[in-house]
Length: 359
Ligand code: AN7
Image 1 (cartoon, helix red, strand yellow):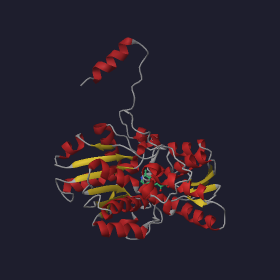
Image 2: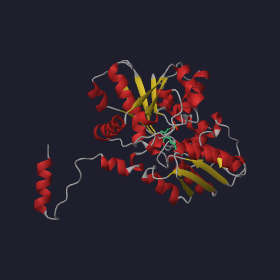
Image 3: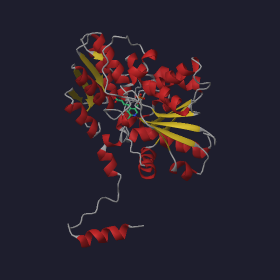
Image 4: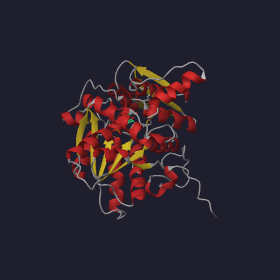
């Protein structure tokens, strides 16, 4: 047969490495199997001999890495007989929970910070039929409320404190290893609640312990400067950043992420909003890859550490691009100083506009 079997999502692919039974009903949208794109123009511009790959998690079904964890969390919630899921979210978790709950035929309750989630994410939660509770407060306050409500209400929490989330998300590390046929030297991620950096380390460690790879990467976690509790060494009460996805001051996986940091001999660092937006734009203009601002934090941090030599030449580096650029059209448009050219619907002005812009 010239055909390969149809790809049916990460639980099916990795079912031997996930807490799943043969007869479990899978709630899947075909998540995972995202492209690992080798950058060509940016390394050349950096003038350094490094191999940089971006793992484009924005190409998951709802446009972010959250789908990897959500397929597991909702599958397990349904298996346990749950009729509703709940999460607090800076946007992507709510979009993903809403979609997978719709697929499962159960209810999703999502708590989002009023005015601080990107437009695309809000649209997703609403159109999938989630019950959207906009709170006058930030993500951290929403998370606290979800934990309290979850104690005595028949709803399953699907934030990354749900251990099945991290189980699903660890599969991103499996995919990277399989494509590179080795582990990278450095793996760079944006850090909010620090669930994803923890999950990736779990995945690399599992393959390492089973002898599939003989090394593990140093895990580099980059935060937005206004929301950088790992840099402050303490929780931040009023986090702020243009990268609303990681506007988180009380990370839920605090201890786990410090353990990753120590075990992998990696580091945390912070990027300013300007650096984050510049990296997002560079990636779109020089490589044709459009990610959301928070996602570009991984590349912004990596570029700085490559330039300084902290990441040495000869290294293989993977940056996770956690979410799609289309999630946040407002921030994208506000970065485009050139704007658009408006002309009459006539050949003359159209040709003139083209000729004057030919380089
Ligand atoms: C694009 O959706 O926490 O460090 O509520 O959406 O695992 O929290 C989002 C997090 C990075 C940080 N990039 O990941 C939510 C939420 C994007 C994100 C992160 C998020 P973690």
